[in-house]
Length: 93
Image (cartoon, rainbow, N blue to C red; front, side, top):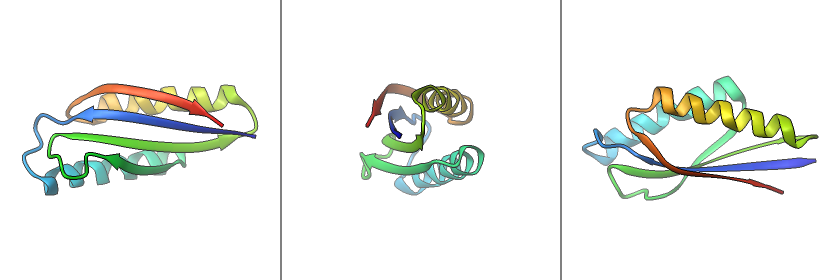
């Protein structure tokens, strides 16, 4: 069994409050969990308005489907978030 963990750091230049940032992240969480059936959590920068680091976790019996899913998730984030991905890392257990 392969457990995949994707961490993504995102810059949100148009977020002007924590409330606005959380609203954007809530929409992103809904999109990703509904579309891809993954677990989602904010990992760092909870008190920063324009920056966040999120974690996405999934599992499968093979590595290739996990890698493919994470690439789709990165594309979805780039399309749906009004900001930019600063960095991302994929880890396998």
